[in-house]
Image 1 (cartoon, helix red, strand yellow):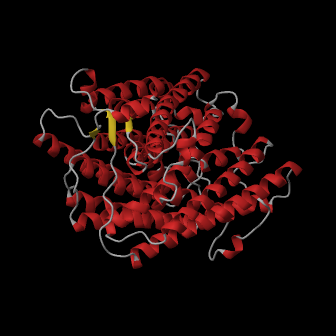
Image 2 (tube, helix red, strand yellow; image 1 turned 90 degrees about the horizontal axis):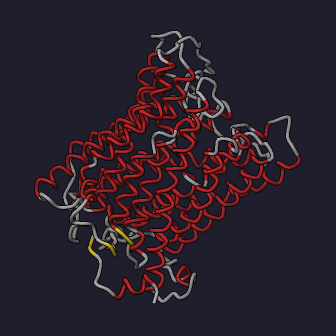
Image 3 (cartoon, helix red, strand yellow; image 1 turned 45 degrees about the vertical axis):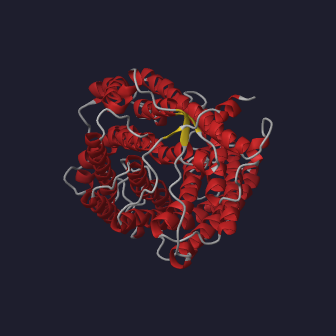
Length: 564
């Protein structure tokens, strides 16, 4: 008898949240729902521009089809900002607010929900104005010396502020729960949700300092120059941890929801708490691995960040074990046998499950290619080549986006009180998108190994290599399939909202655990969060203070490079 089978025959695991029958006031459900609507609307704009990016690798130019589009980089900026920032922030603000409320079994703070939503909406409006008028074609990585209109920077700052307001909401809700439950362990669903925002609250300080201290005064003409190295360093202080702010909401679903959806159970409550604590601890002091080629940063500091970057891979390995263990538990409970037979017994007809399991498969390759980017020497082979967006689309472009799609397939019906429209079509949608992203990434990565540049309009380039051509066709075909898959998702979501059958919908899926939370010992300290935060700040100091002491004060001498 396998370990999982033996565990299943034992006593049932402990529910990681409060009792069932959970609900929120209609006004709070509406605000959470509108966060999703804003996020997926941004994704729609980003996907349309993404099609133009993918086709350009195949030598196909459709930029002329976009009214008002001034240049390639304007479209690339819209693609990156809407997909990587607006979608992810809006979704996290809604989804993790809901999971925290569900975990604690209590409603959220109305005023803070409103404040976070309207701050988010204002930020989207300001940044969109700058991007669509061609005043912010500085790409998603917005650092000096490229200068955008001040409204772009202010808009992005408000997006970050909306996440801070959401954090305060989660903390207040947790504090109220603790007052009513003295001495109890924080329910696991709430723990991982709050831990995600604690990580991001610390990580976002870098980008806040860059915008408020450097970019906004510079774009408003209050200072005549900027400091590109300091700007890049502050950006990447947040720029790599933001990857985990994208991923951890997906991990929340993979750990706490997918096991329930497939009929399995999570292996261990304590291990899950340790994993999310490690992400708080290790996600931030890794930014210099994006600056390996930058002058002005000592090699020793870059090596420290390289080592820490490999360290943050460790909790992802534990995640792979924990999630696959839960999937195996569910597959075997459904009659699967052997080493892999359980995989085919998973409920592939459930669109939420299909989307998220396929997302996990792409993330295996996304994680592996990320190790290449993190390597101090091998990174130089792929630096600034199309390898990088190939990796990127197997992480945020698929692991994150497909998981968000899968979550939406149960979350929107729950929030709206309507059944999902087109369930079978939703399963097809996931496969179309999955096949597309694998083809796109195959093309981008192989072209990158042949030296094809990233962020370059290759359809209009006067140079190239024969080896880029086939890779470009793969990228164009894959991007087209991703576009079709995304459009199917938007159709399903829209029809669910407008025409889905009213009636009872499934409860929020929350798993049980085989190993429950500890009731004594050192693990209880994890629930205090402050110990992990203190250790994280010490690591951040080790990783950044030597550089800052040597480099500061800022050298505001570089003039702006503007294209508007």
